[in-house]
Amino acid sequence: IKYYSNKLSDLVDEKLDEHNARYVDLVGYSMGGLISRWYVQDTNNNKVRNLIQISTPNHGAIIMSNVLFKAYEWIFNIIDPENNDINWHTVIATSQMTYHSNFIYDLNSYLGIFSNNENVNYKVDYNMIGGDKTGALGFLIPGPDDSVVEETSLRIYNDHVSDPVIGYLNH
Picture 1 (cartoon, helix red, strand yellow):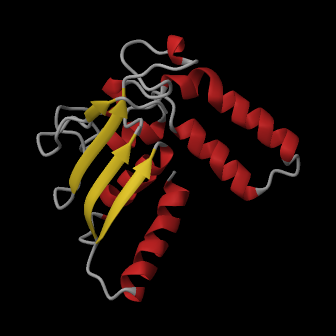
Picture 2: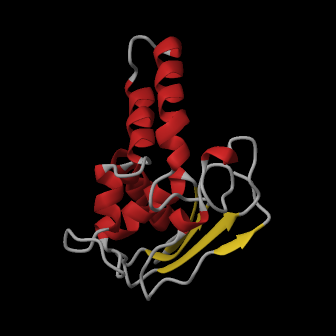
């Protein structure tokens, strides 16, 4: 995810220059929301005004741990036995979306500890959108979810961040 966040940084700089703009609004879906959030927090910059996350597992996705990571790894080994870098960046990023990954810990910790004040960039407005319509794999996830991301994983626990909007949405 950090690899793709660096790519996003280059793209944001390019678009700001191209349009002679001061800031951007970022919308990220699923892993894209994690990439965007890491970019916003890691750089602590003034280039982003709003971050909108749709079905983003801010605390990891149980389904990634249980099913999808192994499936991605298996598929990429078949498609590209030569281990193309782009494919392996995706496999690594997918593994970072699992519960208890070092990435999820770093993303949410403040000074190395979990708290009710998770790490955010206070210059950015955070908005999260998630679903409550469990689909085919939803039986693997406890509680309300969108088939991949449970509602509790959407939340960023910080007084600066509003509760997510939950609606009729399936991942």
